[in-house]
Length: 301
Image (tube, rainbow, N blue to C red):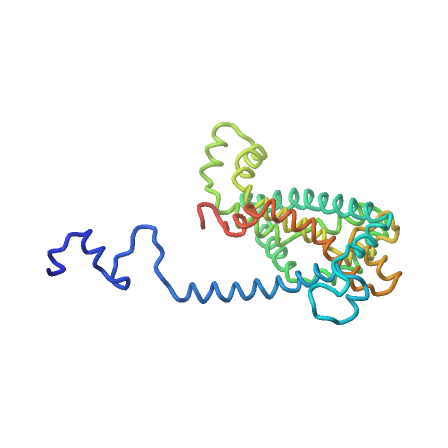
């Protein structure tokens, strides 16, 4: 029987995998996809192994951790001595609260400032708009360490050293987040705002009731990234805070370890405790993170 006389169903059944027509929505077989998956799997394993080693070391005794034995479980077996030693410090819970409070405050203030600035650059036409936005883009490439000394002198002038505001305010300026949000706002159809303006809505009402609800994925991603950066920030809290009751968790735990020398199991326990809240945040909001990163514009653009 010639292929010209076959029905569409018979042609699909008798066709070889190389010549078989692709069904709607079916992805074509591509060796490059398998190779890419293998590379990504190797990269994931290369990142996961050090983290698992840190967790395993945190459950060892100090003698097993310092022995150099490459086994995952020490000779004495798993133990929580390192975690008990860290948590027995009375200020640990105060430091954890300080980290949570400052990271949440930095996130909320950064979101408010960045969203308003991004919307102004996206929708408003004012003198010097392009030059000011170019300056914001240029500031992204400036290393934050360059601004440490000017910021510290500024906090001294404002009497904000050893205060929560001195810890929070220098972290709320995020030019990269303004750029990301502006790109997202640019892709939102202007017709939605024009229709609301015809109905008598003010500019702020349009921003609050139309733009922000449509921007929830990117706002969630920005919030999580800012929260993680604020939680992990060590250099600025280390410089601006001397009062032990105002220290954040990374700074406070480091002072405990420095006072008692290098305790490898406690160092790893500190790393696990500091990373645990971030892991919980990621597990809860992972869908928003992936959706926000994948969505660079409205309608999948």
